[in-house]
Image (cartoon, rainbow, N blue to C red):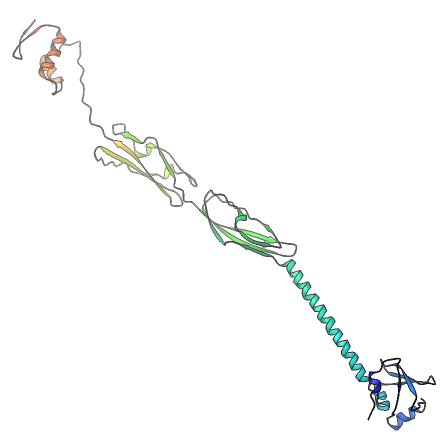
Length: 314
């Protein structure tokens, strides 16, 4: 049986070879290398070849296969063990490098990763109200946010872009801002109420101003009618106006019809009038006796009556 004594030996150790194997060719080779069966030889090298040294300072260089065939030295087994250790070391180093690499990737990823989100994707904002972009940011990690500005002059939908960025990456989020106009226009009239007479003007005449928060001057957009329908001597001019957002405002002007005044006819003092004329001029509610007193006063003369009938006057 071939000895594998040298298989686990190290360079520099001395071993005793108890058996010599091999073919005649190799045996002839050994004649140049004197080996006593009880002598120990020293292993000088087992890296590329097996180098042996005897007590006579003779060296013998053999390949691994030759060392195995002649002496039963299985250097390959030792070589495999070394390779195994090397492999385990390489695997360990590889694992360590992989762990370091993964850790580095995670660390680099933490530097590159940006966490940024908004509280909502869309909001409604009343026309004229203030807008603060910071109110709608939910989360910011490892980034600086460039805030948008809101500019508008009409109701509508306005997309705003938020930008989160660092030295390696940037992402964007969009917030849709819906500007809503829910304020009605205002109608201001010249009067709250007027009297119905010959000086009554058309309904548009009594409009002072019509102002809207968005459309501004809407005086030319006012709808009204000059048709009057009196009820208990009261009628109205009705006004209506709507803005571009559909907000409608109504207003009314009260018109009062007064009773017709009693016509008063003045008397020409330069010309005397008769008693009958005085009765015609005076209203029916005034008694004849009262008219006679007026007549007397006018002529400043004494008048004689008999049971209400004129008899004479001087």
